[in-house]
Amino acid sequence: MHKSKLAGLVIDCQASHVRDAANFWHGVLGGELDIDEDGKYAAISDQGDIQVLVQAVDHPARVHLDIASDDKDAEVTRLEGLGAKKVVTIKSWIVMEAPTGHRFCVVNPQTDNFDQTANRWE
Amino acid sequence: MHKSKLAGLVIDCQASHVRDAANFWHGVLGGELDIDEDGKYAAISDQGDIQVLVQAVDHPARVHLDIASDDKDAEVTRLEGLGAKKVVTIKSWIVMEAPTGHRFCVVNPQTDNFDQTANRWE
Image (cartoon, each protein chain N blue to C red):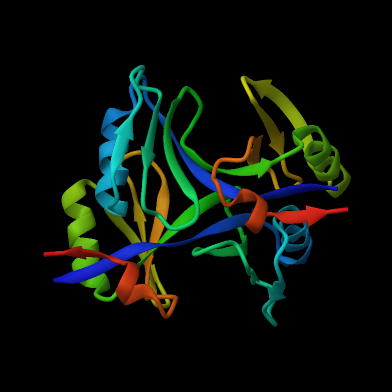
C-alpha cells in the first residue's frame, strides 16, 4: 500500500530570475510571497490546501501539477499503468508525461496532513 | 471593495470528447469523477479546497487557473493593472493572458466558502 495526492501546482515561467513573474502571480493570488535565494522558485502561500509555486524555467510557459507520494517508485509504476511515461528525474522529483501531453511531477509529501488526506492505493 | 481567490485548475486536453482524458486524470488524482452530458467537461472532486476540471479543447494541452471573483469586471480591471490582458469572454468567464504568457480565466464564485476565504481588494 502506498499513498499519493495532488500536492500543488507550479507556474513555470520563461525567465532567468523568477522575481517579475512571482510578483505578478502574487498580485493575482494574494497570500504571502517567498522567493528563494537563487531566484529560481517562489512560493505563494495561503492558497488553500495546495502549494502554489512559481518557477523560472528555460522552456515555454506552462502550469504543471505536482503529485506527492510516500513511495515515489510505487507511484511512478502506478502512473505508468495508467498510461503516463517517465521523462527525467531532477533532484528528488520525477518528471512524467501524461497521455494527454501534460508534464507533471511526482514529489515527496509536502504537508503535515499528507497521511490523513492522501489517496490509498492497494 | 471586491473579492477574488484561486478557485481551481482546469486540465485542458486536446480531444473531441473528454472521457479518456478525464479517466486518466481521475486515475491519477482519485476522488469522484463526474462527466457532463455533452462530453466537454469533467469534474474531479475531493482535491482539497480547489476545483479540478478536465476540459476537452481544440488547442494544445495545457493547465489553466480559474480565479473566482464576486465582481468580475472589477477583478479584470485590477488584473489589467497588474499587466494581464483580456483575450475573450466565453459564456460567464473572461479569458485573460498573463505577462508570463499563461492563459487564465476569471469566473464566478464556485464554492460556499468564497466570502470567508477570498482576498479582499480595496
